[in-house]
Image (tube, rainbow, N blue to C red; front, side, top):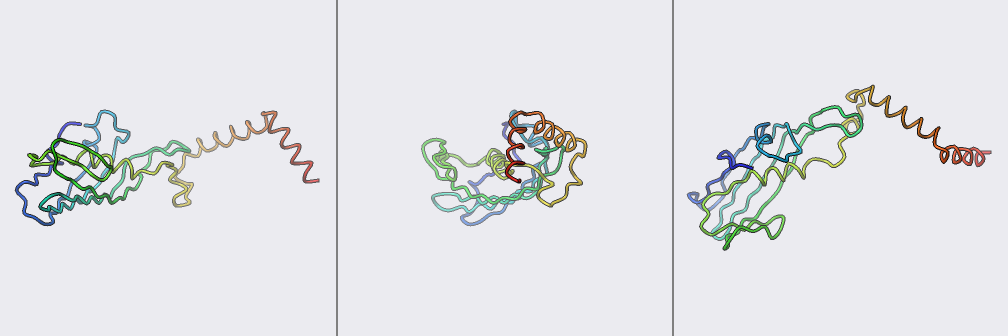
Amino acid sequence: MGRSSAFTIQFSGLKLGKHKFELHVDDTFFEKLEYSQVRTGEIEVELELDKRSTMLVLDFKLTGWVGEECDRCMIDYKQKLNGEHRIYVNFGEEYDEPDESLLVIPRDSYELDVSQLIYEFIGVSIPLRKVPCEENDDRSICDKKALEVLAASTADENNNNPLWVKLNEIKDQLKE
């Protein structure tokens, strides 16, 4: 990912204490990423940087949406996104990420590009199973034709498969 000045925080001139930054993520952010799974989105990032004498503490709050595809009927929809993440930044000899919440940057650094961190936070905020109609019990947003095809293929699979035929016979016998 190329460096973007919009996501580069210059901390060297800041006084000790808390500082707030507001960042905006949109489609151009995702276009700059070669292998991004996300293509569209609108996300507001509130970043609170707590500058201490020996380290930085970064608190990220993400709110917005990303464009996703339903796992069931494949319609495009806007997946709501909310997340809060904290990163500790220490100074050392060279860049290192020893832990998921710890970042080590060289002592002579005066700025930090947070774009990769934001992208990773977006990724972990997206649910693994994406079926929007289950979230609000509204099947009207699903593609009706896709659901009909899915239901028909499931019914055909159950009727044509000899294992299902045998299992259904056993089930009928147990009912008697």
